[in-house]
Length: 584
Image (cartoon, rainbow, N blue to C red; front, side, top):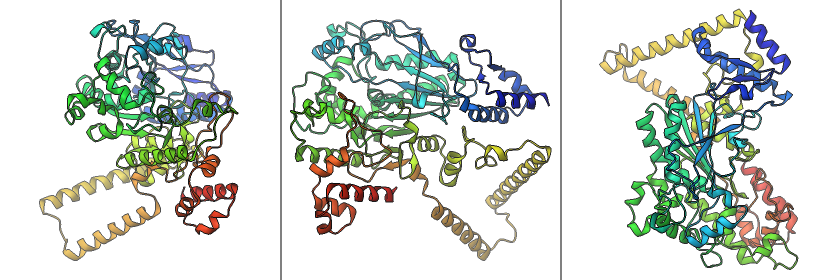
């Protein structure tokens, strides 16, 4: 068959297969690209099987390298009255994919400013100024992590429609204040920017999507928390068939007492509680109405903190939060700047500093216990989703990418395991393919007939089951008696018990919180490096030396206290890592 020959040639030549999208494909086309017209493929039938086969070929051919990777294209909002801080036009970057009806919208992070002084400091700081303007935005943008086009880096979402919204409002995506409001020099319109982006995307294909995932990191993660229900309500009007979900990365900040109080001047040293108190007035911040109703107007600032707002969020939400978040530690002023830089003149990290860090991790863990979908590794880090190694961070042997994918598709038990360990599990597959390897998926006539007979048997079983259920509801079931019913219930109960024994419960796949109370005790954590020198820092060893006393370590590990007290630091470290690995 000509088409089969073409597929073999594509695989052999390592040719890039390009899913045609609505932007100007000619700008991304190489001489080896093959453009596919999916409207014509629809008329041929079996489009899903074809798309899955092409995606598998693309992955198998990937050792030749990803060439001509399509970048995201810049678009400005159609409503030019909605602007960045400095009045320049707001906008977004987009990469469309006809191979998927899944859309991911990402909110960029980048701290905030909350009064005239902090905003002036932000505008005059080289590495912060670009968070207040669209001037200098490139026409095209490359992305990584969960937004990457590379299937090795991003195996489950590389083919999704991607929208990246740059952060240029400095208001944690909550503001509604145009420039000049109350005499403000700057506009704060983050919430309105997101709202307008959704409107602009509807005619670009979002209206016909099956799923929209609103994601964001740091201030963007907080933006997901405060905007998720509003986006879901907006989509219910504009595109009611689209399912909306949210993934908030590193935006779960605490209004926890600082280790060392400093005057609230700069965002990097001001307590989150004090900053949001001032900011919500300046931004005319918009937070969920259900949360507002729980507090007097003077305390609406509390609705920026995840553990306070979570119970009011109705839309499915997945929370990613490091137990020892770098940004939280920075604003709590735990370490002196000389200690952070690693200066020789810096004071030794004190026991009280480590104890504060330990208690902060415990407090974050406690606030996450009732979150239904959460991934909280014991890492000293900040932001995950855009890291090239985002997928491989794990807790209890389950990777972050696996966990999000199973949660997003409502997979549980063995279905989650099969769908995330199969190399061809790029999208939710049917039951007959989820556990198969590519080599087992032969296309011979014999196998196709066998597959068709299997599908027919399944269809008949489902049909008969429905008939039996209808008879039972009408009270017409024949030959039924109490003994038979008890026997069937016992059989079903034993079947379920075996399944629960064989695999973890469904929540185990997306309720993952590290049990180890020490920073960087999870070996999959990103390497922590000194932000000034670039040197890698072993925080676990430092914590053992200056932090927990040996009695607490012995209790944690269930070891004899006298034995632990006589161990050197290296032996204690090995013992802790053995305990952590055993738990995973």
